[in-house]
Length: 304
Ligand SMILES: C[S@@+](CC[C@H](N)C(=O)[O-])C[C@H]1O[C@@H](n2cnc3c(N)ncnc32)[C@H](O)[C@@H]1O
Image (cartoon, rainbow, N blue to C red):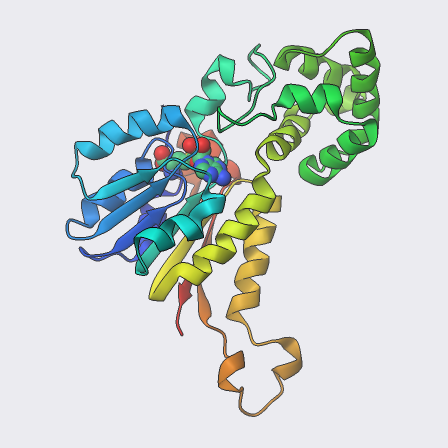
């Protein structure tokens, strides 16, 4: 089952009242959405997910609480247009990025390098591009780029060369085949520092689901949608997502550098947002749920 990360903290920071209108961009297994729904008997919850299995499970869970919610089965890249069709009034928005534990644990989804499965890694089962297509069709240069950019993998070149060599003999079909190729193409000492396939698998997953570009657009749209006084909470799981969030939050919550020395800041340059929190899980949470170890919660409030 999926254990929600930074659950109490993120719900508290959403600062809800009974009438709040809230958007959960990453419904998953409704850990956060259930808590939100309980707090808004006279409000409304819109919840996005692109994973049909997660939606079926979560719909049952939410129905048992109340019916003032709607699940929107689409990529949150469509956040703005989907919400604008429904309301202009949004008090809280949550992103809890990445994949859920069931996505990782189900062998056939192909996200995990511990379990043998077809190289899939799609969050949206209707999408065409799969990990298999990337591993077997991308040029060596393209593989190196994504391993470096999205995996920060220092042996990107030798791993990509290994992949190109092996797929010349036969297509690489499964997660374990790929994990073994990665293992064989990094130095022995590197194999002792955690699983050598971790970063490359992360990179391929990000590429399959176009995770960073989609998040950047959706976060900017979330800041456009949120009411004055409303908050956007973002839980990230790796440095690249967090970097995007930090940068966007900085841009909207600070006066442009060149204007900082002015005695009075003109109204149109006054920041519309203020940063409320930037926290990590407690030691206790990390001990209980290892998946939370790399998580970080950033919260911003619209003030103007
Ligand atoms: C970490 S889980 C969320 C868990 C949830 N907060 C809970 O406590 O049960 C992330 C979920 O977001 C979904 N997701 C990730 N990126 C998405 C995107 N771009 N559009 C729609 N759903 C997305 C995944 O399918 C997954 O179900």
